[in-house]
Length: 196
Image (cartoon, rainbow, N blue to C red; front, side):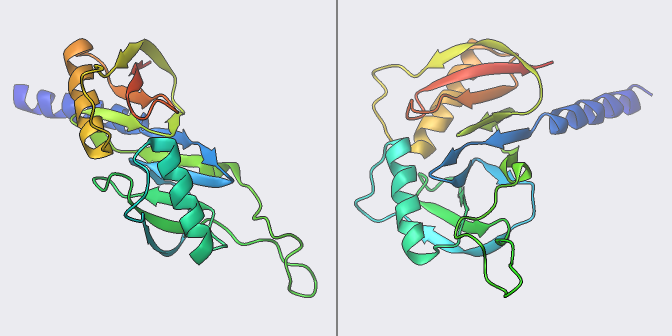
């Protein structure tokens, strides 16, 4: 009986955790940016883009570099899904919807119409924490505090910064449920949250 009760409580807590993984991503230069998250709205996959060897490592500069690179090859795109573990050097190029057609079959505008549902995402989990980069949760939460990576930690690679932040948050706030990386901090500052 105790085993069944434990399993039921675990499943209930996993269900509650799954409800909190919904987020809303940021836009940069009219492009939806998905980092450590996936879109929930339907989209069309256009291809894969990779950063050049001289691409900057800083978060904002890296995103801008990838957008410019993508616009040359896929001018119709409106979203990038950065692949985890690639230092934000590989991204799936996507398009959420097509421009409305006129009576003659041509689009009225070159700009793709915005749909607020395109911003919705499902966050990835790393070592039990929901990760929000270039976005924030849509579920209500309590702010537990802010964490900064130590100045002595001088690595710029995202696949080293994110695990280091997770480790720091786990040590400082053991009851935390999510990490919201502060935009423009190059993954060195984050808000630590617990969902209501």
